[in-house]
Amino acid sequence: MNSKKDIMANPVIKALNFRHACKLFDPKKKIPKEILDIILTAAHLSPSSFGLEAWKFLVISSDEVRKTLRPACWNQPQITDASHVIVILSRPEVVDPSHEYIKLNFKRRSLPKDVTKAYIEKYKHHMETEVFP
Image 1 (tube, rainbow, N blue to C red):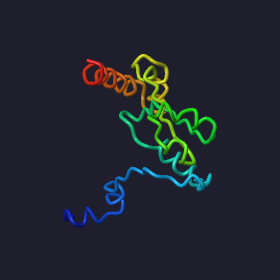
Image 2: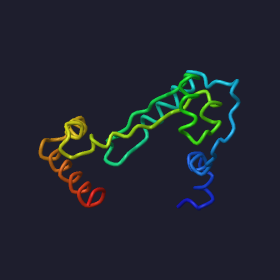
Image 3: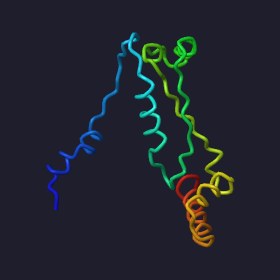
């Protein structure tokens, strides 16, 4: 059995424990496309409840658009100083158990029809009792 010390030394656990809000950005530095692609891939692959990933990512790199957005973001300098702003857009309409997105998402798992139907029913029950009671 691993000790707490061993677990805390794990690089994944170390990374998860490191929480840092970047307050200052060097406006002269830009995130290279290769690094931004890795960040977006990691975001896209981030797990969600029931594996639905009901979100989209909007990447804003235009200086003009970020200047326009800044007043709506409490005039935070990060909006214009960072090379990119990533907005997470939730899609609450697609998490409705009757939405086609839900059906397609469960069907992609190639499970037997009765198992898929049971999974959708479990999801529906979860949504009705836990999320939107």
